Image 1 (tube, rainbow, N blue to C red):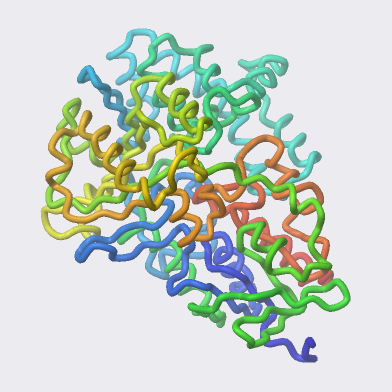
Image 2: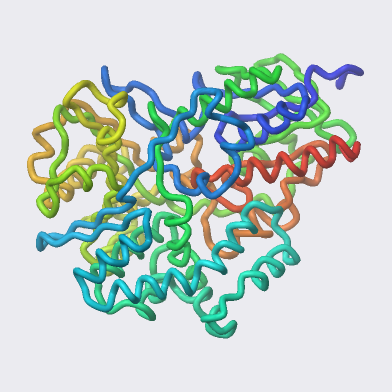
Amino acid sequence: MAANTQDYDVITIGGGHNALITSAYLAQAGYKVGVFERRDIVGGAVSTKEIVPGYRFDLGGSAHILIRLTPIVQELKLEDYGLEYIELDPMFFAPFPDGDSVFFYRDEAKTINHLEAKFPGQGEAYARFLNDWRPLMLQIKDYFLSSPSPLELGKKMLGGKSPQVSWPYTFQTLFRPFGKVVDDYFTEEKIKTPLVWMAAQSGPPPTEPLSGPFVLWQPLYHEGGVARPKGGSGMLTQALAQHIKAHGGEVHLNAPVDKILVEDRRAVGIEVEGQIYTAKVVIAGTHAIETFNKLLPDEHRPKLAQRMRTGNGFGIMLRLALDSPISYSAHPGNDARVALQLLCRDRQQINTAFSDYKRGEPSQDPPIFAMSFSAVDDTLAPPGGEVLWLWAQYFPYELASGNWDERAEEVADKLIDTFEQYAPGTREKIVGKLFQHPVWLERELGLYRGNVMHLEMSMDQMFMLRPFLGMANYKTHLKGLYLTGASTHPGGGIMGASGRNAARIVLEDLEGKGV
C-alpha cells in the first residue's frame, strides 16, 4: 500500500489549533507537512466566521490566556503571519445583584489595592494567596510544557516548593475541592465566588475532590494576562495555517479523513474520500475517540480506548449580535465590557447548577461567563454594534426530558433572562444569534457529547493518564502514529502546549530515525 516515496514527511489529521501548532513546528524544521481538515475553515474550536451579516462570531474558544504562558507565538513568529493580540485589562469583572462589583487587573498591586479598599483585609489575603501558590504553579505550568510522566511531575513539583507553604499542607490543598480551597484565605464571598467560577471553567464542579489546582492557577493570570486576537479568536489558527504554507506545507480543507492506513503495525498514511496519501509520520489531532475508535482499523484499536470518558455535556454558548453595547447596572463604564465578565452570585449558584445537570436538566439559574470583545476590537461588529458571548454551566448532553432541538429556544431565552438581571435592556438590542448547545457542539465541531475539553478533566484522565494509560506521551501503540490535541496532556483550552510537546516528540523521532 505504501509507496517507496511518500507524499509527505508528515500528515496531520485535523486542523485544530494544537494540530496546526505541531504542523507549524515540523514545517519550520524543514519537513514537508500536509494538513487535512474536514471543514471549510481551519481552527476546529478556535475559528471565527461571519454568522450574522457584519458580525464576526467565534465558534469555540475566545479568551486567550493559557497560550500567553507559552513561547509558541514567539517561536513561530506568528505576528509575521497576521496575528495581532489585544490586551484585556481589567482581566476579570464580577458584578453582583446588589449593585456591587469587583475587578481583577493584570497588575497585582492594583488588584490588591482595589480589593483592600472594598473589603479591608481581603486585599492582603489575595496577596498572600498569590505569593503562596505562584512558585508551585509556575512549576506545574512548566510541566504542562513537557511530556507527561511521573518522573517529570515529581521534578516539577519538588522544584516548585514555596517556603511559605509546608508540603503536607500543599498536597492536602491540591487534593481538596477547589470550592473549599478559597476558605483558607478569604472571608468575603464576593472574592471567593469569582475565583471559584473562573476555576470551574475547566469543567469539574467546585465540590470535586482532587481539584484544588484549578483555583490555584490564579497567580498565573497575572503572569501572562488575558488577550484577544484582533479579528477574532480564529486569527490564531489562520496565522498558523499561513505559517505552514510559507514553510512549504499544504493545508487541505473540505478533506475529511476516512481512515488511517496501517501496515505491519506502522501508520503509513490516510485515505480521504478514496484518495490515498502516504507519509513517514501520521499525527492525529482529532478527538481521541475519533482516532482510536473510528479512524483506525478494528484490529488496531486498543481495548483501553473504550474506557475514555467524555461525560454528559458541560456547558452552552449563546452568541449574540447587538445593535448597541451592553451596560451593566453595577458598573456602566467601559472597563466592565473590556474584562471577562464573571456573573455568579455565590458558590452555591454553581453547585445548584451542577445539581440540575446531574438530574438531566438544564440549569434553571445558570452562572454566566460573558465576553464582549467588540469593546476592544471594532472589526467584530458594525459601527455602534456589539458582539456578546454568554457561556453558562452546567448543561447535560442527554436531557431527562425532550431533546436539545426541542428545548433550545427555551434554554436560550432563560439565559438572556438571567443576563438581563445584570445588564437590563440587552434583549431589545439583539439582531442575531447563534446558540451552541451540547448536541450542536458535537454535530458541528466534533466535540463528543458536547465536551469542549474532549475528555473529562478529572484526575483519572489527566497527566500520564490522558487520554489513557500507555498513550500519554503523544505516541501510540503503532509506529509512526502520534497524537495531539485536547484529548492529550495537558487537556483543553487555548494553550497549544499539547501541539508544541507533540512536535518535540515527533522531531526527536524523525531526527533520530526512530519512526
